[in-house]
Amino acid sequence: MASLGDSNAVYSSVKDYYGKVLESSKDLKTSACTAGAAPHAIVRKIIKTIPSAVNDKFYGCGNPIPLGIEGKDVLDLGSGSGRDCYVAAALVGPQGSVTGVDMTDEQLQTARENIDAFGTTLGYTPKLKFVTGYIEELKAAGITDSSADICISNCVINLSPNKKL
View 1 (cartoon, rainbow, N blue to C red):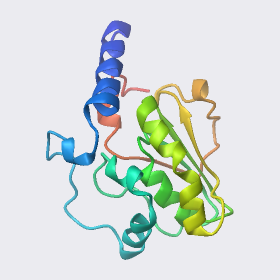
View 2: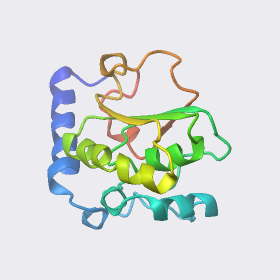
View 3: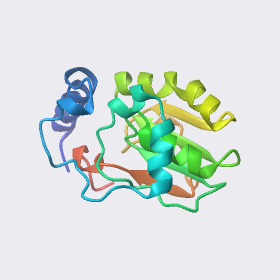
């Protein structure tokens, strides 16, 4: 397990890189976060409806969201700009909910400020929210045990200094 000092250095570095250095996915300095296969056609169609500000700051790889999740409650660990949450919100429909957790204020701002525009596209207001917090400390972020049916994460757990939790 990383020491608190090491953990704080990792958090600071990750926040700086994803919050201040990167302005779009084109700024990524690695090809490690790329997907070999295209997402399912349903997901590709949804992605086209997501506001460009959200898509432009997508730093994940692939698509960790299963189909057939209507009415489910989804938790996204390290949601960033929220692209996977937006996809999940469309898939869960008006009866489901999606919560994204991220520690990077700049990413959360992008995620939050585009919800209304996405709701207009969907034709209903999605139960979609983004909370500030660390994926290793979900209770501190207001996430209770058993509050999600499905938990997703996309190229984030590798950035955590404490993977043993």
